[in-house]
Length: 327
Image 1 (cartoon, rainbow, N blue to C red):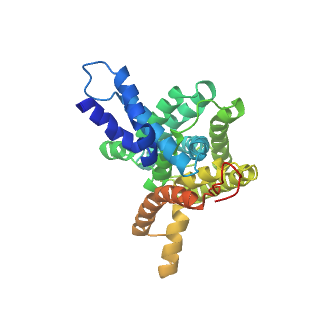
Image 2 (image 1 turned 120 degrees about the vertical axis):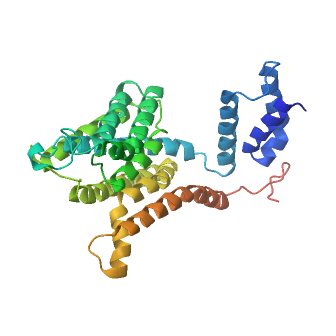
Image 3 (image 1 turned 180 degrees about the horizontal axis):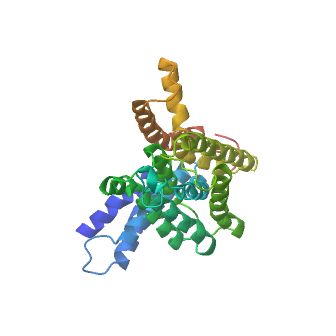
Protein backbone atom coordinates (compact mmCIF):
# COMPACT_ATOMS: atom_id res chain seq x y z
CA UNK A 1 0.00 0.00 0.00
CA UNK A 2 1.54 3.32 -1.08
CA UNK A 3 1.09 6.65 0.70
CA UNK A 4 -1.65 7.89 -1.64
CA UNK A 5 -3.77 4.79 -1.07
CA UNK A 6 -3.26 5.05 2.67
CA UNK A 7 -4.51 8.65 2.63
CA UNK A 8 -7.55 7.73 0.53
CA UNK A 9 -8.39 5.02 3.07
CA UNK A 10 -8.17 7.54 5.89
CA UNK A 11 -10.73 9.67 4.09
CA UNK A 12 -12.83 6.56 3.58
CA UNK A 13 -13.45 6.48 7.34
CA UNK A 14 -16.15 9.05 6.69
CA UNK A 15 -18.28 6.10 5.52
CA UNK A 16 -20.02 3.64 7.88
CA UNK A 17 -18.02 0.53 8.78
CA UNK A 18 -20.31 -1.90 6.94
CA UNK A 19 -20.18 0.22 3.79
CA UNK A 20 -16.38 0.44 3.94
CA UNK A 21 -16.13 -3.30 4.38
CA UNK A 22 -18.39 -3.95 1.39
CA UNK A 23 -17.26 -1.30 -1.11
CA UNK A 24 -14.13 0.31 0.33
CA UNK A 25 -11.67 -1.45 -1.99
CA UNK A 26 -13.76 -0.58 -5.04
CA UNK A 27 -14.00 3.12 -4.10
CA UNK A 28 -10.30 3.51 -3.32
CA UNK A 29 -9.37 1.59 -6.45
CA UNK A 30 -11.42 3.94 -8.61
CA UNK A 31 -9.73 7.02 -7.18
CA UNK A 32 -6.28 5.45 -7.58
CA UNK A 33 -6.98 4.57 -11.23
CA UNK A 34 -7.94 8.18 -11.95
CA UNK A 35 -5.00 9.73 -10.08
CA UNK A 36 -1.88 10.81 -11.97
CA UNK A 37 1.19 8.62 -11.22
CA UNK A 38 3.15 11.29 -9.32
CA UNK A 39 0.28 12.33 -7.04
CA UNK A 40 0.95 11.84 -3.32
CA UNK A 41 -2.08 13.53 -1.79
CA UNK A 42 -5.80 13.26 -2.69
CA UNK A 43 -7.04 16.34 -4.51
CA UNK A 44 -9.40 18.72 -2.72
CA UNK A 45 -12.20 17.67 -5.06
CA UNK A 46 -11.61 13.98 -4.24
CA UNK A 47 -11.47 14.68 -0.50
CA UNK A 48 -14.65 16.74 -0.65
CA UNK A 49 -16.37 14.03 -2.70
CA UNK A 50 -15.41 11.30 -0.23
CA UNK A 51 -16.45 13.30 2.82
CA UNK A 52 -19.79 14.28 1.31
CA UNK A 53 -20.42 10.71 0.17
CA UNK A 54 -19.60 9.41 3.64
CA UNK A 55 -21.97 11.90 5.23
CA UNK A 56 -24.79 10.89 2.87
CA UNK A 57 -24.26 7.21 3.65
CA UNK A 58 -24.23 7.82 7.40
CA UNK A 59 -27.43 9.85 7.16
CA UNK A 60 -29.01 7.14 5.02
CA UNK A 61 -28.05 4.52 7.59
CA UNK A 62 -29.65 6.68 10.30
CA UNK A 63 -32.84 7.20 8.34
CA UNK A 64 -32.11 10.94 8.14
CA UNK A 65 -32.01 11.28 4.37
CA UNK A 66 -34.05 14.50 4.55
CA UNK A 67 -31.44 16.26 6.70
CA UNK A 68 -29.38 17.84 3.91
CA UNK A 69 -32.47 19.05 1.97
CA UNK A 70 -33.75 20.39 5.30
CA UNK A 71 -30.50 22.29 5.85
CA UNK A 72 -30.92 23.89 2.40
CA UNK A 73 -34.42 25.05 3.38
CA UNK A 74 -32.99 26.43 6.61
CA UNK A 75 -30.33 28.23 4.54
CA UNK A 76 -33.02 30.00 2.52
CA UNK A 77 -34.93 31.03 5.66
CA UNK A 78 -31.69 32.20 7.27
CA UNK A 79 -30.74 34.32 4.26
CA UNK A 80 -34.25 35.79 4.15
CA UNK A 81 -34.08 36.70 7.85
CA UNK A 82 -30.58 38.17 7.54
CA UNK A 83 -31.72 40.25 4.55
CA UNK A 84 -34.68 41.64 6.52
CA UNK A 85 -32.44 42.65 9.41
CA UNK A 86 -29.87 44.16 7.04
CA UNK A 87 -32.52 46.24 5.30
CA UNK A 88 -33.82 47.46 8.65
CA UNK A 89 -30.44 48.34 10.18
CA UNK A 90 -29.09 49.90 6.95
CA UNK A 91 -32.06 52.28 7.04
CA UNK A 92 -31.48 53.04 10.73
CA UNK A 93 -27.79 53.73 10.10
CA UNK A 94 -28.55 56.58 7.74
CA UNK A 95 -29.94 58.62 10.66
CA UNK A 96 -26.60 59.57 12.15
CA UNK A 97 -26.31 62.19 14.89
CA UNK A 98 -26.12 65.88 14.16
CA UNK A 99 -22.40 66.86 14.01
CA UNK A 100 -23.15 69.77 16.34
CA UNK A 101 -24.10 67.33 19.12
CA UNK A 102 -20.54 66.05 19.45
CA UNK A 103 -21.77 62.44 19.57
CA UNK A 104 -19.35 59.82 18.15
CA UNK A 105 -20.41 58.47 14.77
CA UNK A 106 -19.06 56.89 11.60
CA UNK A 107 -19.25 59.75 9.14
CA UNK A 108 -22.92 60.38 8.34
CA UNK A 109 -23.91 57.00 9.77
CA UNK A 110 -24.68 55.85 13.29
CA UNK A 111 -21.87 53.27 13.46
CA UNK A 112 -19.45 51.09 11.49
CA UNK A 113 -22.23 48.51 11.32
CA UNK A 114 -23.28 50.10 8.05
CA UNK A 115 -20.41 48.17 6.42
CA UNK A 116 -22.01 44.85 7.30
CA UNK A 117 -25.59 45.84 6.53
CA UNK A 118 -24.84 47.06 3.02
CA UNK A 119 -22.72 43.94 2.42
CA UNK A 120 -25.77 41.81 3.29
CA UNK A 121 -27.93 43.51 0.68
CA UNK A 122 -25.74 42.07 -2.11
CA UNK A 123 -26.60 38.36 -1.60
CA UNK A 124 -30.26 39.28 -1.14
CA UNK A 125 -30.26 40.76 -4.65
CA UNK A 126 -27.95 38.15 -6.20
CA UNK A 127 -30.17 35.33 -4.99
CA UNK A 128 -32.81 36.45 -7.47
CA UNK A 129 -30.59 36.70 -10.55
CA UNK A 130 -27.55 34.51 -9.79
CA UNK A 131 -28.30 31.78 -7.24
CA UNK A 132 -25.51 29.34 -6.48
CA UNK A 133 -21.83 30.16 -6.36
CA UNK A 134 -22.19 33.94 -6.83
CA UNK A 135 -24.71 34.17 -4.00
CA UNK A 136 -22.58 32.03 -1.67
CA UNK A 137 -19.53 34.20 -2.38
CA UNK A 138 -21.58 37.30 -1.54
CA UNK A 139 -22.82 35.64 1.67
CA UNK A 140 -19.22 34.79 2.61
CA UNK A 141 -18.19 38.42 2.08
CA UNK A 142 -21.13 39.59 4.20
CA UNK A 143 -20.24 37.16 7.00
CA UNK A 144 -16.64 38.39 6.99
CA UNK A 145 -17.80 42.01 6.96
CA UNK A 146 -20.01 41.32 9.97
CA UNK A 147 -17.15 39.61 11.80
CA UNK A 148 -14.72 42.52 11.27
CA UNK A 149 -17.14 45.25 12.36
CA UNK A 150 -15.91 45.20 16.00
CA UNK A 151 -12.30 45.35 14.78
CA UNK A 152 -13.02 48.26 12.45
CA UNK A 153 -14.90 50.05 15.20
CA UNK A 154 -11.95 49.68 17.57
CA UNK A 155 -9.38 50.81 15.02
CA UNK A 156 -11.46 53.76 13.81
CA UNK A 157 -12.58 54.76 17.30
CA UNK A 158 -16.16 54.76 16.05
CA UNK A 159 -19.33 53.25 17.52
CA UNK A 160 -20.39 49.74 16.48
CA UNK A 161 -23.61 47.78 16.85
CA UNK A 162 -23.93 45.76 20.06
CA UNK A 163 -22.51 42.25 19.90
CA UNK A 164 -25.96 40.79 20.54
CA UNK A 165 -26.98 42.36 17.22
CA UNK A 166 -23.98 40.99 15.31
CA UNK A 167 -24.00 37.47 16.80
CA UNK A 168 -27.33 36.31 15.32
CA UNK A 169 -26.39 37.88 11.98
CA UNK A 170 -23.22 35.75 11.93
CA UNK A 171 -25.17 32.60 12.79
CA UNK A 172 -27.74 33.32 10.08
CA UNK A 173 -24.94 34.00 7.60
CA UNK A 174 -23.11 30.74 8.24
CA UNK A 175 -26.37 28.86 7.76
CA UNK A 176 -27.21 30.89 4.64
CA UNK A 177 -24.15 29.36 2.94
CA UNK A 178 -26.22 26.16 2.61
CA UNK A 179 -28.91 27.82 0.48
CA UNK A 180 -29.82 25.72 -2.55
CA UNK A 181 -28.91 26.47 -6.16
CA UNK A 182 -32.05 25.32 -7.95
CA UNK A 183 -34.98 27.11 -6.40
CA UNK A 184 -38.18 28.40 -7.95
CA UNK A 185 -38.41 32.10 -8.74
CA UNK A 186 -40.70 32.79 -5.79
CA UNK A 187 -38.22 31.26 -3.33
CA UNK A 188 -35.30 33.15 -4.88
CA UNK A 189 -37.19 36.41 -4.49
CA UNK A 190 -37.76 35.96 -0.75
CA UNK A 191 -34.46 37.54 0.47
CA UNK A 192 -34.92 40.60 -1.75
CA UNK A 193 -38.52 41.06 -0.64
CA UNK A 194 -37.42 40.64 2.98
CA UNK A 195 -34.74 43.34 2.58
CA UNK A 196 -37.32 45.77 1.17
CA UNK A 197 -39.67 44.85 4.02
CA UNK A 198 -36.91 45.66 6.50
CA UNK A 199 -36.39 49.05 4.86
CA UNK A 200 -40.12 49.76 4.96
CA UNK A 201 -40.40 48.68 8.60
CA UNK A 202 -37.57 51.02 9.63
CA UNK A 203 -39.08 53.93 7.68
CA UNK A 204 -42.41 53.33 9.37
CA UNK A 205 -40.88 53.30 12.84
CA UNK A 206 -38.49 56.21 12.62
CA UNK A 207 -38.84 59.54 10.91
CA UNK A 208 -36.15 61.38 8.93
CA UNK A 209 -33.51 62.89 11.16
CA UNK A 210 -34.35 60.75 14.16
CA UNK A 211 -31.28 59.45 15.96
CA UNK A 212 -31.38 55.99 17.53
CA UNK A 213 -27.92 56.13 19.07
CA UNK A 214 -26.54 52.74 19.97
CA UNK A 215 -29.54 50.90 18.55
CA UNK A 216 -31.09 50.91 22.03
CA UNK A 217 -34.56 49.52 22.58
CA UNK A 218 -35.07 48.83 18.89
CA UNK A 219 -32.69 45.86 18.99
CA UNK A 220 -34.27 44.58 22.18
CA UNK A 221 -37.69 44.63 20.50
CA UNK A 222 -36.82 43.79 16.90
CA UNK A 223 -34.54 40.79 17.42
CA UNK A 224 -36.90 38.72 19.62
CA UNK A 225 -39.82 39.56 17.32
CA UNK A 226 -37.81 38.42 14.30
CA UNK A 227 -36.72 35.26 16.09
CA UNK A 228 -40.32 34.47 17.03
CA UNK A 229 -41.51 34.92 13.45
CA UNK A 230 -38.69 32.69 12.18
CA UNK A 231 -39.58 29.99 14.73
CA UNK A 232 -43.28 30.12 13.80
CA UNK A 233 -42.51 29.89 10.07
CA UNK A 234 -40.14 26.97 10.60
CA UNK A 235 -42.63 25.21 12.88
CA UNK A 236 -45.52 25.63 10.43
CA UNK A 237 -43.29 24.41 7.62
CA UNK A 238 -42.35 21.35 9.67
CA UNK A 239 -46.03 20.57 10.32
CA UNK A 240 -47.05 21.12 6.71
CA UNK A 241 -44.30 18.96 5.25
CA UNK A 242 -44.65 16.41 8.04
CA UNK A 243 -48.25 15.78 7.06
CA UNK A 244 -46.83 14.50 3.75
CA UNK A 245 -44.26 12.33 5.54
CA UNK A 246 -41.58 14.84 4.54
CA UNK A 247 -39.07 15.50 7.33
CA UNK A 248 -37.24 18.42 5.70
CA UNK A 249 -39.19 20.99 7.71
CA UNK A 250 -38.38 19.26 10.99
CA UNK A 251 -34.68 19.18 10.24
CA UNK A 252 -34.78 22.82 9.13
CA UNK A 253 -36.34 23.75 12.47
CA UNK A 254 -33.65 21.91 14.43
CA UNK A 255 -30.89 23.62 12.44
CA UNK A 256 -32.48 27.06 12.89
CA UNK A 257 -32.68 26.77 16.68
CA UNK A 258 -29.20 28.28 17.13
CA UNK A 259 -29.87 31.59 15.30
CA UNK A 260 -33.37 31.69 16.81
CA UNK A 261 -31.83 31.37 20.26
CA UNK A 262 -29.37 34.17 19.54
CA UNK A 263 -32.16 36.39 18.25
CA UNK A 264 -34.01 35.81 21.54
CA UNK A 265 -30.92 36.37 23.66
CA UNK A 266 -32.50 39.26 25.57
CA UNK A 267 -35.47 37.12 26.55
CA UNK A 268 -33.32 34.14 27.58
CA UNK A 269 -30.87 36.24 29.58
CA UNK A 270 -33.70 38.33 31.04
CA UNK A 271 -35.42 35.18 32.27
CA UNK A 272 -32.26 34.15 34.08
CA UNK A 273 -31.62 37.56 35.61
CA UNK A 274 -35.27 38.09 36.39
CA UNK A 275 -35.51 34.80 38.23
CA UNK A 276 -32.26 35.50 40.05
CA UNK A 277 -32.65 39.09 41.14
CA UNK A 278 -35.75 40.58 39.60
CA UNK A 279 -33.57 42.79 37.37
CA UNK A 280 -35.57 44.72 34.72
CA UNK A 281 -32.87 44.14 32.08
CA UNK A 282 -30.32 41.34 31.70
CA UNK A 283 -26.79 42.07 32.83
CA UNK A 284 -23.82 41.81 30.49
CA UNK A 285 -22.35 38.65 32.12
CA UNK A 286 -25.71 36.92 31.84
CA UNK A 287 -25.98 37.91 28.17
CA UNK A 288 -22.52 36.48 27.50
CA UNK A 289 -23.32 33.27 29.37
CA UNK A 290 -26.61 32.88 27.51
CA UNK A 291 -24.90 33.44 24.14
CA UNK A 292 -22.25 30.82 24.95
CA UNK A 293 -24.92 28.35 26.07
CA UNK A 294 -26.93 28.84 22.87
CA UNK A 295 -23.79 28.58 20.71
CA UNK A 296 -22.85 25.27 22.36
CA UNK A 297 -26.23 23.64 22.89
CA UNK A 298 -27.81 24.67 19.58
CA UNK A 299 -25.38 22.82 17.27
CA UNK A 300 -25.32 19.86 19.67
CA UNK A 301 -29.04 19.31 19.07
CA UNK A 302 -28.45 18.23 15.48
CA UNK A 303 -26.29 15.12 16.13
CA UNK A 304 -28.57 14.34 19.07
CA UNK A 305 -31.59 14.47 16.76
CA UNK A 306 -29.83 12.25 14.21
CA UNK A 307 -28.99 9.72 16.93
CA UNK A 308 -32.59 9.77 18.15
CA UNK A 309 -33.86 9.34 14.59
CA UNK A 310 -31.62 6.32 14.18
CA UNK A 311 -32.83 4.80 17.45
CA UNK A 312 -36.47 5.29 16.52
CA UNK A 313 -36.01 4.04 12.99
CA UNK A 314 -38.37 1.18 12.25
CA UNK A 315 -36.58 -1.81 10.81
CA UNK A 316 -38.75 -4.25 8.84
CA UNK A 317 -38.75 -7.77 10.23
CA UNK A 318 -36.82 -10.32 8.22
CA UNK A 319 -38.92 -12.90 6.41
CA UNK A 320 -38.27 -16.28 4.86
CA UNK A 321 -37.59 -15.91 1.11
CA UNK A 322 -39.52 -19.17 0.43
CA UNK A 323 -42.72 -18.99 2.47
CA UNK A 324 -42.73 -15.33 3.48
CA UNK A 325 -43.05 -16.10 7.20
CA UNK A 326 -41.37 -13.63 9.59
CA UNK A 327 -38.28 -14.95 11.31
